[in-house]
Amino acid sequence: IPGTRHLCGGSLITARWVLTAAHCFDPIRKISMVYLVIGATQLTKPGSGAQLRRIKKLVRHEHYNPNDKSNDIALLELSKPVECNPYIQVACVADPSLILSELQNCWVAGWATGGSFLYLLTAQNSSDVLQEAKVQLIDVQLCNSSRWYAGKIHTHNLCAGYPEGKIDTCQGDSGGPLMCQEKDSDYFWIVGVTSWGRGCARAKRPGVYTSTQYFYDWIGVHIGLQT
Image (cartoon, rainbow, N blue to C red; front, side, top):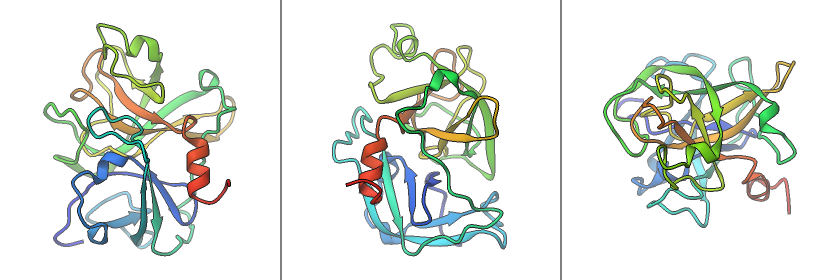
């Protein structure tokens, strides 16, 4: 779209709702100026299978704190439902009964290319083509230890990447999914929403994600699946 720039990623979880990070909208004053491009793998050439939507309603978690990025989760109600096709499918959100340690092959996706130190993951140097990377879930206690994030990880966070760094979410990936594969199947679950990190792919500074399991009920209530 001429005159626009990439803001954040997100995941389509019903035909009408997108899951993303609350901090993506910190700098946004008018959500009417935000477009959602769904089903594209290249920003400059979305392709015939992509669909464009506006935001009907923004729901940021009521306890989201922009200072420490706690409760960094948001939902976007679309201006009209998306029509699923070979390029667009609804993703499955991990429910609390899922045992994360039993999942295998975790992946992240986004439009980032890497770059300089940024406390928050924002779209300063985004890629034109959708990127993906395989990552490992990292024990939260280890991630929160003194030589890692030293107490800055919340109970509703997940950490993923590699202890030695090298592969990680980065600028432009915010709001996008952390997906893990169910063992011995082709089924993937969204277990996290990309939230923040220290730099990109640095040792002992993995990406930090908002757990979808922790906020499963909150998601369900706001999209009308629970009362």
